[in-house]
Length: 431
Ligand SMILES: *Cc1c(COP(=O)(O)O)cnc(C)c1O
Image 1: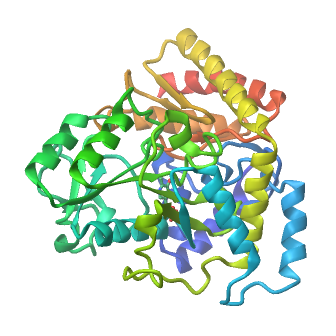
Image 2 (image 1 turned 180 degrees about the vertical axis):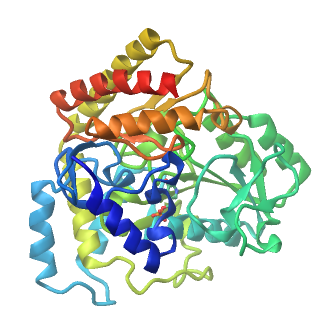
């Protein structure tokens, strides 16, 4: 089947929306085609407006860990919406949500709800600065923390150089307190602490980097960050917007046994509605207004509809811990199938996987950070993507994104995906 309706919609969208989309990666630019416009989704499947059906591994970039439209959550929407969708006053569900999150994630004692992952990291950084009375923040090359001005920095020429904003519109002054280190490189972090003694408020990190493809932390990396921040009186912030409630109820913190001082959430915590959250140790979170002097607010924060859905999601995950075992098995099955295909087709590829997050890099391994990631062959990826799509398998339209496995993916889906992968790898080999 064709995608004429999507193509026509995109053409019209381009007249009214910058680039035709409300978030850049949706434009499918890096794979050289137009986006598919979605009609609906159910379970592991997604249908575009031309009637094509795909096995969906984007899953809204992570939130739909139970698959699309899980029954319990659908019932919650109509029940809650009929009582009103926003009050701007507290509701009991916010208290329940805060209790669930802090129980699931022992490192944090208190949590504040916001409306996106971007808002969560922005606020966490402000609180870390307010708490330490210091300004500098260390981030890692290739880690994404939303589109906050201060986090939009790249570091082309290696660590610790003068920071240049990645985007026009970000004043140089705003990023002068952002220090970029190489992911998985503790020596870079040590050097930064040595260079700016007593000036570094915190270190923010994706404990599993999942916005440059998927790059697992090397053994000891997160522990090393824990130790260095503790020694230097800096706040360790885990950005668990992707990994939170995905690598287990306690996210990457639980998986790797490292307790940060603060953590940021998004995606799964809102079950597909716009939600983010940041939390931390009591002493740090009591800095937040009105308990303390660090200002942070939101008209729609803790929105009753969003909270109810998020809570339903967290309770479902908590009530069925076997979901995580199944996710691990499914993702491992894809990994093994892909690995066999790669060996047979003989392409220089690297597979990475942590729990239900996978990535197939079109470059030779090992992939330990942005230095290796950026050598991926995006032309081969584009051919691979197009072939997968034509075979009814929807993966992120970019080499630098994760593949998300959900609880709704069936054995049949996995088998079809592995068979499609074989053909798509051959297409990539020709490209
Ligand atoms: C998606 C993401 C964000 C930003 O969240 P938004 O809800 O898109 O603002 C921040 N950090 C990480 C690790 C993310 O994956």
